[in-house]
Length: 235
Image 1 (tube, rainbow, N blue to C red):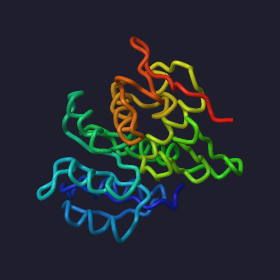
Image 2: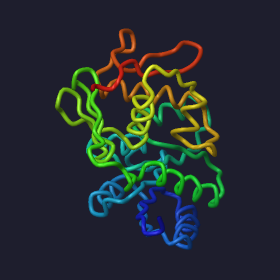
Image 3: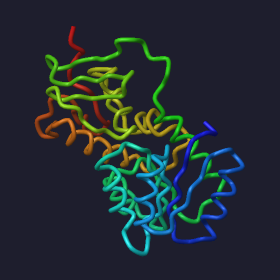
Image 4: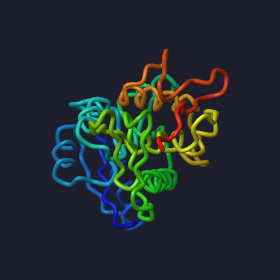
């Protein structure tokens, strides 16, 4: 995983220098941006494997940059934030970020988060051929090999974690997963964030696949527990 390209976006030069030095020692290719404008330009040029994005930037907010990246790309995004309240972090995830880390943090912790996020979101090479599964009479199609989801034949852009969440739930229809189980399965056992982040990813996922939380077709809320996938795979 050492050949991955990382784009660091932060307006604090000292933080950039420390992070860059630490990541380069782990053989990552690292590029820096101190403004939102330069970050978007570099993103288009580099097509990085992961973006580390500070939310407090001088020209464009990190939330807006995240939305702009998400409008055209599923590249994993790790937020850096000085905000520590649950609502602030959840709002950041609603813009499309995959994970977050609060300041101050150690470079070692950031490296672990980056490595874990890349491992979780990188497509696996050992998928079986013909791995596409369909549900609801072909209305929903999930292709693990190609990392694609289609609704009524139209390709839907999911973040890597949204895809993994959908794949997990749909691979175990009718089974109720607790939020804690989904956090461990999707974010990893070393994730120390809020279980409510799963609610955010489920909300985004439902919107993208056209599922109504009040009358769900695919993903149902199991009150007091978590979530389950309602339909079996098409034969």
